[in-house]
Image 1 (cartoon, rainbow, N blue to C red):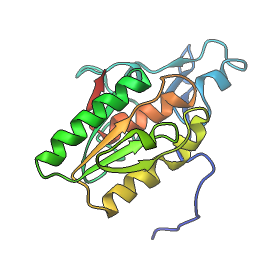
Image 2 (cartoon, rainbow, N blue to C red):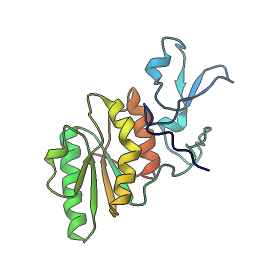
Image 3 (spheres, rainbow, N blue to C red):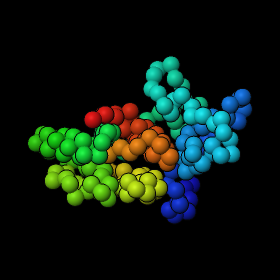
Image 4 (tube, one colour):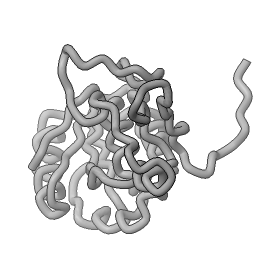
Length: 180
């Protein structure tokens, strides 16, 4: 049975914190951020699987081990300076559309009007990343409903709630992240 309790306040699952070793470690970033925990637990760290990729790095938390949260479409996440991200996504969207593909662009409030190609949906506001966290999975499902072939997504800064957002985007894209 599935019980739908409606929209959540944060939009991302809870933070998973491992307290079984000498150093408290965030195994899955969520709504409670590293910065939120530091005043209470000064030596808290991020699990290596959140920071790095590699075949010898095995995540310890559920939801971190596989291509989780994935939309039906292929997804590419672009990271870097915002203007570089917009340029790279615009160029790739045009190429993909010329190949006959339906392209979804996961933009932000600040950039959504800068795209000329693709189906553009804003995931939230860069100045209030909690809006992005709240809307992320809903936007991925919207692209599924629209049956896009490829989702080109704007990454966010890897700090605060941005760590959790990028973690989920990394899982949703199968690790398909491009630095521009």
